[in-house]
Structures are given as C-alpha cells and as structure tokens.
Amino acid sequence: MTKINRSLLFNYQGVDHYFCSSQCLDRFKAHPHLFVGDPKHGLSPKQKGQKALKKRRIGFSEPIDEELKAVMEQSLLSLMGIESLLFEETFLYVTYDLLQVSLEEIEAAIDQSPGKLKSGVADRIKRGFIHYSEECELDNLAHLTSDHGHH
Image 1 (tube, rainbow, N blue to C red):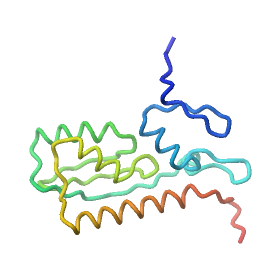
Image 2 (image 1 turned 90 degrees about the vertical axis):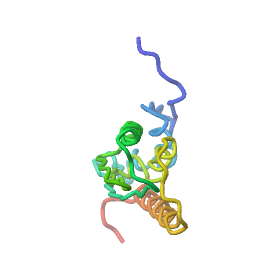
Image 3 (image 1 turned 135 degrees about the vertical axis):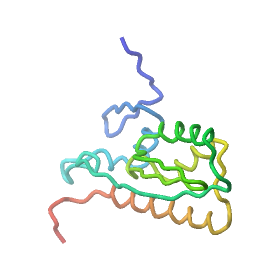
Image 4 (image 1 turned 60 degrees about the vertical axis):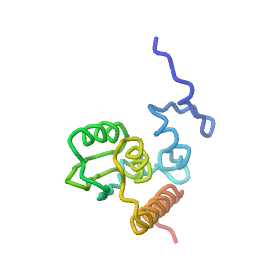
C-alpha cells in the first residue's frame, strides 16, 4: 500500500486534491482556476490542454563551466514545466510552460546553486517587470469567463 504525503493534500471546493510536489501545490493554491473549471464557465486552461510557453535568456555574471552546468540542469529539470535548457557561455536559454513554472521560480532554483545571476540595476528591473507580467498573465488566464463569446 502506498503511503500518501498529507502535506501535499489540498481541499478545494470540497474536493481533495493530491499533488506530486510542493511546486504543484503552491501553483494550484495561487491560481486554482488554471486547473479546475466549473459548470458555468467550462473547462480550465489546463483541462483544455493549453500551454503558455515562454522563452527567456538568463544572464550570469561569469561563464558557466561544465560542473556548474550539470548542477543547474539537474536542479532546473526537477521543476515541472521546464521544456528545454541551452547553456551558452554566460547565458541560459530556457523554455518553460508558465502554467506550471514561472521565471521567479526558475531564478530561485538557480539561486540554490553556485550560479550567480547578473545583478545590475537594469537586470533586476527587467526581471521584476517579467515577474509582474507573468503574474498578470496567470491572473488573466485564471479569470473565469464563459467560452460563449458574449459581450
């Protein structure tokens, strides 16, 4: 018999939902209507099979050697929603599904490794703007609307 990790259990609208990771649980809690539809508004974006693919170039303060690359790849590929990674000198090109993971979460995983993101004022402002725009996009996607096209 498989033991269920109760810390990954969340009751939403009277239904128990079990999650594979804390990342998935946190994402669900923040935007449940990305994942759960309702009879009045229909299926959620995730139930419709939607993806919100994003491609980003992340800059590092110094070139990434093979050892650091391996550590970061392992960490980043453990996140749900990472589609692809490409390391080139001081840059990481990442493609991810915003419905499952955000740039902010990707940066947090990088911060857990020895890799150091570029931290100039312009870099921080740019990342902050992307974080904000991703949050707005998720809020819009999670907003309940009917699929009937009424005005």
